[in-house]
Image 1: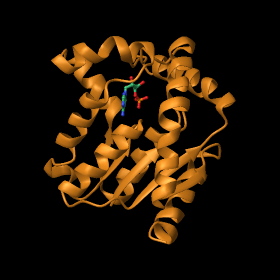
Image 2: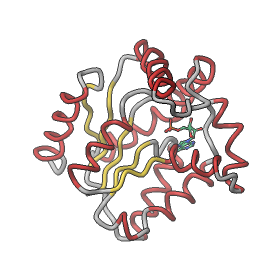
Image 3: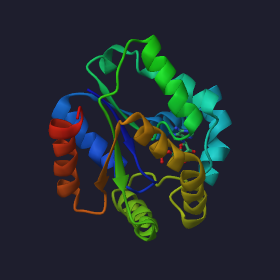
Image 4: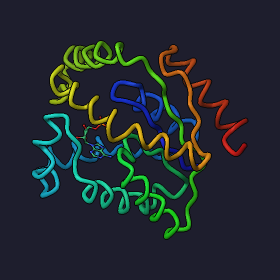
Length: 197
Ligand code: AMP
């Protein structure tokens, strides 16, 4: 199964992707995680991306598309994958379509978590507190200033991606404000009853 999870920062994409990964035995491919790993490892991509990411901006399409193209052909992605945080621009969506055609792969569904934007900053602040309490590193962009930039990027650059998949008939939406288990059940239903409808 090959899925895309869409939704603004703090919508719960990472949480739901982890559950889907367990349930379907498919890989969660988070471009944010891949980029953070590159920053930590100080690879050339990481060095390029760090300042943009810390400020809450988007890393260039070329870099991100290159990372995904390489990642989806790894053996562990053969059974399927959930793209979490990609595509985030129309260019990326079109590049993904082209790479899927080239690799003879098909998407099963694009799932968008609809959320109330006013609640997102609270969720992000909560995530930062939980990470701190667990002794884990807090993301450099989980702060109000970078969050505002991330949300702006979402509104202007990523929202059109939902329209794109609505146009192709692949988009399914669900309420991301519900309890975590309820969202998981709703996604399950979309995938079992509706994804190919
Ligand atoms: P995330 O973990 O998905 O919130 O991503 C964290 C940061 O990584 C984003 O704010 C961007 O700076 C960068 N990033 C992740 N995915 C993408 C993408 N598809 N396109 C551009 N930048 C990305």
